Picture 1 (tube, helix red, strand yellow):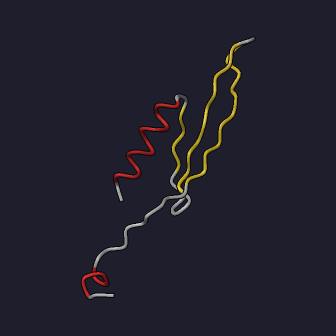
Picture 2 (cartoon, helix red, strand yellow):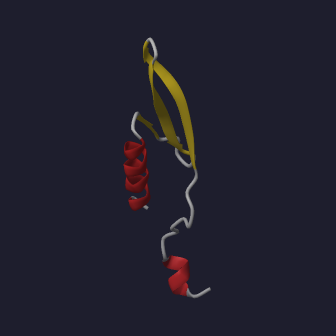
Length: 65
């Protein structure tokens, strides 16, 4: 290992999240999927109602690293 490698900040090569989804009833015969994604490393969580919001938030978290 060179000194340059030793001094470089550790950047994880992978990230671990948990995703929970459930069906929420809005009215009779009407429902939608809702969810929660949580970072395993620090417990930060984000709740979502649309899949596109989940993807956008995951991308945001990954860019922070």
